[in-house]
Amino acid sequence: MGVYQYRDLKKPSGGLKHLVHKRKRRYAMGELFVPAVLEEKEEKIIKRSTGGNLKVSLRKVSRAIVTDKKGKSKVAKILNVLSTPSNREYAKRNIITKGAIIQTSEGKARVTSRPGQDGVVNAVLIEE
Image (cartoon, rainbow, N blue to C red):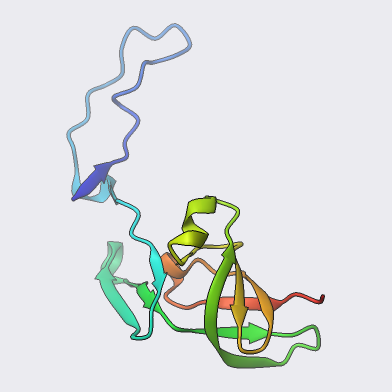
């Protein structure tokens, strides 16, 4: 199901009588939020976007690329979602978003990527 994202349904401002009517177009459609959930088996969805480009979206995640202060990166297993700044209910449901603090096999880390749009979970270790 798509979400229409044009502004032509809103009230005009600045003394305008009305906006020029636009037809709904496919390129003006967005999508509903589908979260990246912590599970054992990983699942990615590849979608075609404008210009023939491809977008990779994560649906189920089990691993993250964790970087430490020295700049070394490792692939670590995600154990738990501790907190999420966008919605505290997401931590209870193990949904990973940007800014979420996750418990990995390397330690606590903050997610720096957008898993639903980047197709990967990148994180930076937090010093305790």
